[in-house]
Image (cartoon, rainbow, N blue to C red; front, side, top):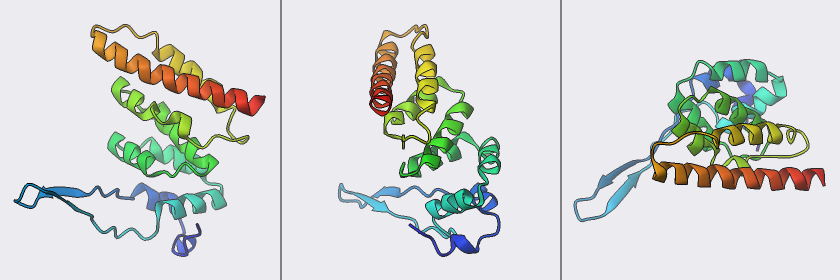
Length: 170
């Protein structure tokens, strides 16, 4: 989807760096119901429009380097908003994955890795991701319940990624 406003932006990476992700605000109406208040964004263009411009400008090196400066909350919000409809969405997710340091964040982040955009342009990243997941599966836990949850999530994603890779490589 072409964003007419994004085409006018000179430096889409710097605009993306300032991008604010607005979450809805929930509050009670006083009668036992929860109301959702959607906040209106004053962004100069859509997130996808910015990403399309970065793709047009072939400025992924600057974009991925910019991710290194962003706080974890921004990175996770960014990833949540991706539609996973283009190869560069997966490129962004792989960079974010490499920047996360807390195990719980990494596991939560990886839950959807098998639904990222995988095609011929990026399928070579699947074995790399599988190896990282396999190394995470060797973690020693002190809590059996945490181990069960983490192992279940990681194993499911790993198996799904293996199937995807097998399908792509026949």
